[in-house]
Image 1 (cartoon, rainbow, N blue to C red):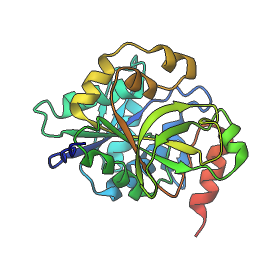
Image 2 (cartoon, rainbow, N blue to C red):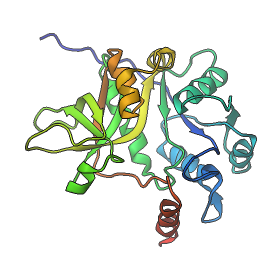
Image 3 (tube, helix red, strand yellow):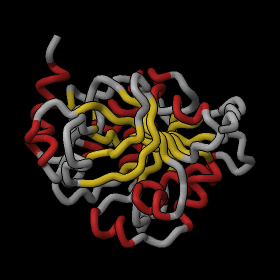
Length: 253
């Protein structure tokens, strides 16, 4: 089997899509945590990762104002975008029309306690030129998490001892069947710029709509996604209970 060439040097940019119209927690990006809006906490974590410039792609002016007040950069995007990926691509096109950045990290705006090392880890699979999209996964330790449809499972082709594997499928069910580990998908993506452009041009796919998982659109189109294994699952914020938990966590010394 011929060797797969390594990818050339990368010039990443981190873009954080954010909108106020969350169904389970309206106004989520501006929720106060330890005196600052949630989106500012995420922006600070992305800055600490030190992989490249950080930009917030906002659906509303209030988010732009909050980020700029903290010293960050933000751009107002079309509020009608159907997904965060579309919002990220608009912000990228406006911020970097000359395509200086060839890798785009799409970082969720609801990870205020994110370990910055995870942002750096998301770049690792792109060392292989054949990889279109890189992401993260972590082993599932509890059986109830494997059965929970809110815990997205990544099915990985993983060689013994390897820390990066090719993603064959993503599901809300505990797949694959049989003895062995299951992996919790962490929704941080590092796209090659051309891959992101292709991805947002594709129509929604049948499996994507069935599982309600956007990344299946890429797999159905034949795009390659590889996942790097990490040993931590970041605390996300989707509900008021999650917000209370994060406030307590970040208030701890």
